[in-house]
Length: 124
Image (cartoon, rainbow, N blue to C red; front, side, top):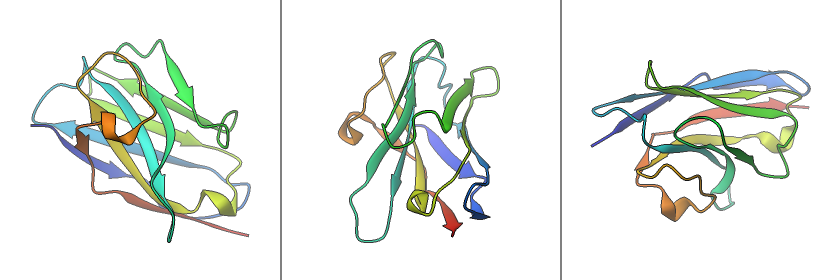
């Protein structure tokens, strides 16, 4: 069993930056693909970014490409999401997710482990 805990959310003005962190415990995530998803009020959960077990492969949603960067530190069992040039449309609860596979995926159903989420609010 893997426990994922997100942190780093908050309120920021448009154009600002936030860095989300996801700390894993219970099992090493070194062989897991990891992802970030978000869910805005009244909307379905959507894919944001994912990273392969080695960190070599990263994929992003078109809406965040060039603004967000996903990274991982397997020695520390953590995953991060650096968010720059934030927009009001980025406002959502952000979730960290883990997939017991070395290959990245965009589909939330491919992920077995989920954190509780952290709120990101971007004001205009």
